[in-house]
Image (tube, rainbow, N blue to C red):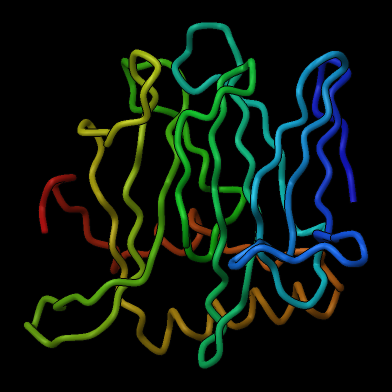
Length: 215
């Protein structure tokens, strides 16, 4: 599976293979991303995925810091867990020249809404890094919440966006029904990837806003 990556480059996602008789290195990845650029060294990135979903990835160009130059975000679906079927993604962020700025592993239930406009007064876009975390609700009961923390590109580095809150929503029966309906709809239409809907999920009235550095 391959896509055009701009400026004549092409990004491939493929299964790793070795010639007959070659000893496979320990912990060698079963899959990889390969970036081909004319006259440049091949870039190899280890990858993992289940169920042969080679097409389950997005390559997005976006100006993260508002300086007029677009960065590249590679979001790759890896696995879906048992139980409630949490989808795990690897997010790699590159500069325009394909220098890797940062990699985020096990970003859970990624979706198109994970790129959001920066708060008013700051140009560019931020990236939501999401997961399921232990939490207490307003009544003090322990449980699990879906959480989004945000990172911003500043001076060439991805750092916590300290000017916007962390968002958390308790994973209760209402949330479960909403989330299940989305994924069932995607599966019924044979979507190549199972994406979350952060903006719909975390716009619910039960979502709480926390200081970015709050535990």
